[in-house]
Length: 363
Image 1: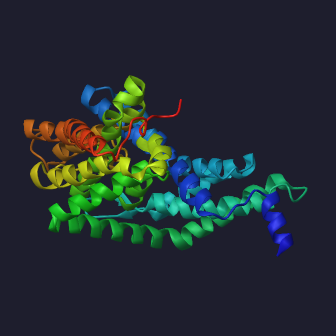
Image 2 (image 1 turned 180 degrees about the vertical axis):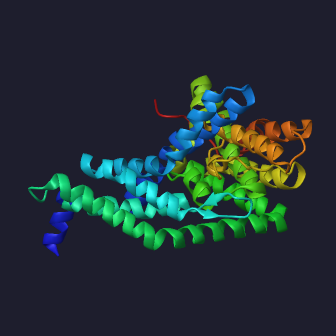
Image 3 (image 1 turned 45 degrees about the horizontal axis):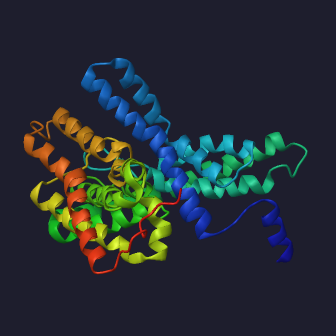
C-alpha cells in the first residue's frame, strides 16, 4: 500500500473531490465555453448580421467541444504533454457517444461522459507516462485505448442518465413552475458562486426550457446581486469583476460570514418563479444548456436566451421576439437582481447581519 501511495504521489495522481469535483469540473466548463458556447455566439451573430464567415467559424468551434473539454480536464489534472494531446481523441469519442438525441433533436449527456471518461483516461495515461523506453507509443496508446474503450462502454449510459435527470427537472418545472422555479434558481445560483461549475452542471443535464430560464435567473441574481450589494466596498472594479466575471470572488467572505449570501439567495428565490410563471423565460440556446449556468458572465446568459429566441423563431416554435420577451429578460437578468439584492442587503446591514467590510474583495 505504501508503494502504491508513493507511486501515485510521484505521478501526481490525486484521487479527491477537490481535484475532480472542482478542478476538473471547472476546467471542463472553460473548455465548453471556449468551444461550444463561443461557437454558438459567433453562429448567432453571423446569422443576425448576415456574415457567413462567422457562421462557419462558429460551426468549427462548436464541433470541437468534446476535444476542448477533455484537454481542459487534462490540463487541470496536470497531465504531461503526450497524455494531454491524446485526450483530444478521448474527448471527441466520449462527447459523440455520450450525446443522446432528445425530442426536438437536441443532444445531451456528452459533457458528463467527457468528464468521467477523460478523468480516468488521463490518470491511466499519467500512470504509464515515461515508464518505458517507447513512451512515444505507449502513453498515447494507453490514453486513447482506455478513453475510447470506456466511451464505447459507458458513454451512452452516462448520456442517457444525464438526459433522464435533466428531463425530470424540466418536466417538473413545467408541471410546478412556481415551486421548481424557486428550487432551480436557488440551487443553480448557489452552484455558480461555489467553487464548482454551474455551467458544466447545466450542460451535463442539458437544462433548457423553463428550467433553463430559472437557472439563468438564479445565476444572474448571484452575480448582479453581489456586484451591486458590495458596490460601497468595491466600487466600479468590483461591479465589473463580479457582474461580468464571477460571484465566486465572494467565496472567501462567505466562509467568514455566510449571512452575506442571504440577500442574493432571497433574490434568486423571487426572480426564479417570476421567470417561470410571469415571463415564461426559457433558455433554448443551441449550445444545449451551458448558457443556463453562466449568468451575466460576459453576458452569456442573456445572449443564450436571445440565441434561443432566434432558433425558436427559425424553427417555427416561436412566431416572433416580442417586447414582453425583452422586458422579461432585462428584468430577470439585470434590473430585479440589482434592485432586490440592494434592498435586502440594506436591510441586513441595518440589523447587523452584514457589517462594513464584510463584502470587501481582496486586492
